[in-house]
Image (cartoon, rainbow, N blue to C red; front, side, top):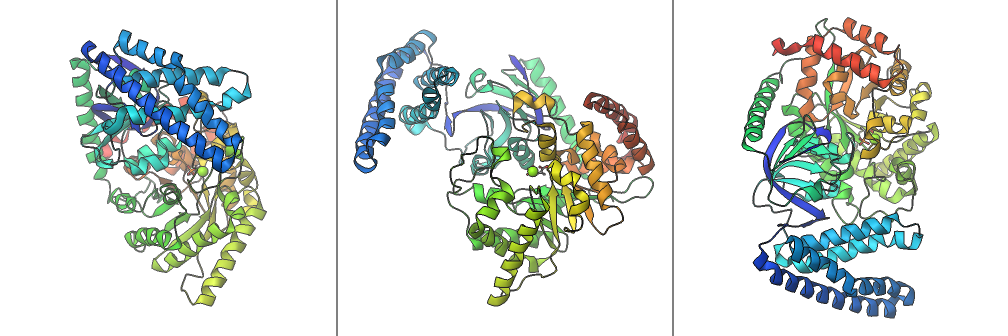
Length: 580
Ligand code: PEP
Ligand code: MG
């Protein structure tokens, strides 16, 4: 039995067999073999190396013919690498001595080589790491042949163990059979975490090399509430977690019963609880959990799921589906927020050294106006179906917001000329997710009808901490006094104006922060659908007066630790259990 602690990214407990995605979409079904199978595995390895060598040599010849010798050099490196007898010897040694399967042994050797290449000072060799991934995939494809598992058509429920899950991968999975994620990298607000919450499955991230520690088919427990993964549990542990699983389901059922109760504090202040969604199918689920509207529709998945940019018609269909499911309820469609860790296959290659600070999000759209205009046309066309609102992400300057609005006005003019209907009075808002936008909120409220505070990026940019990097995850805290000051600044800027303010970062769905956020003046929160019932429970158990006292107290702290300790104490004091 191995127990590993990581970051709790999506709550709940799952128990089931592991499927290890060692390299991208490849699953290594078995890690070890019976000694009698050793010669067969070596034979598989040799056949795969020979087939890969043949392919690469053909590619080299074709590249030399079509693209010249410079490109052919890349394949010459691949060929040389695959033919190196030392490579074969290392893999064979693992098969013979440790009884690894050919696929697993090859993966291990390549992992080691990748590590070595990454650590050398020579930039040429460093660059070759990507080639090694390519070689690994090619050889594994030959070794595994038909044994590769098609992730879009899984035959049994599994727990996915992987280095990382990209949004485009996640939507291609067969969701009915995915029980949980156990992932090497990532932080609490990384997109892998957001996806897990979207799928409503438990997830633990930042488990360093869980892909190396777990074998395909091994039984795993993923405790997403506490950030723990247990491999090959003993019967006592298994029983303990089964009981926890039952308890968790009971709590969920009880929370669901709050669906039709109003989200009003004990002193009578209504709080609007909205849902964040990633795909149109989630809209129904959001209302089942009691959402009063869609506070954030992240449109990126539409772009991440296909090799080309989605057409106007495809986008329109998706937006219309959300609008129809929402009926008269408000829907905030965020214009596409691509870049950084959300790279669409059809985007031109990113050359940014620091992609979070690079050409991402609205910046990308404003430079790719053709694609942006198609996107805006599709949104506007869907606006006749209900209460649609448009929100621009990643704004840092007033000029950017004006440019985005001018582009929208242009598109409206085109639609007018073509006689295509749309809602002219569509409310236009923006995300506040950069410190610049928060500090200048007073200027932005003159230009936008509503603001939505994105604390995931706001925390990343204020604290200079990559939200997806597990090595600095301990420094990522949305309750850091610097972040809270900015949140307060934004809420204050909207006072006395007809500007709505919402908070849609992951902190909106964490019960511990709820009283503080209400105390800071927020009356609208947007979160993963599944989080709505537990936030409603807190809202109904507290008073605004108490929340304001909490906010006042927190404003005197200057470290995130003090804030967290205090909020933990408060959460225990609220104890709203009897309200259920
Ligand atoms: C945010 O940054 O807080 C946010 C809600 O947007 P996303 O998580 O999609 O970047
Ligand atoms: Mg963001």
